[in-house]
Length: 160
Figure 1 (cartoon, rainbow, N blue to C red):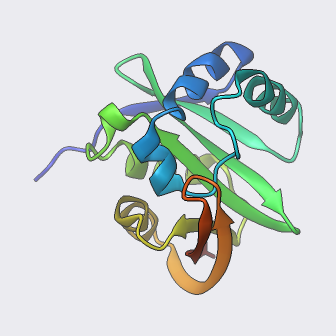
Figure 2: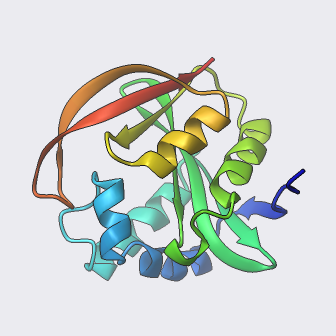
């Protein structure tokens, strides 16, 4: 039996934002995330936005550590009154079970239910992560994906 990847979640601080910024510059990761800022290379905008999010009591942001190294982030935020989950894993740590383990651990801390996850229709990795953690697909929407410069289908998942 495969052993679970041991990760740690800790409260995110401003020092983590520089690392998060570097992760989201990857073109393939942006393409899969799809719904990204219009200009992900604008560091000032990125740092300003995330610094403000760190002080918002409705937002729960955690830094994901693997072997004491920052490998990603996971966040609960609200959109139109619904709790939503988002996560970002550094590409060099994909396909290691880190996202699934981080989401499981995060859901033990973040008790808001229902909670939704949204993914680009072709983001197979995130589909597996959400389903592995008990989310079920409840719908689809179309939205403009900045990273693809076009409108695409988005799958909506829900955990109750």
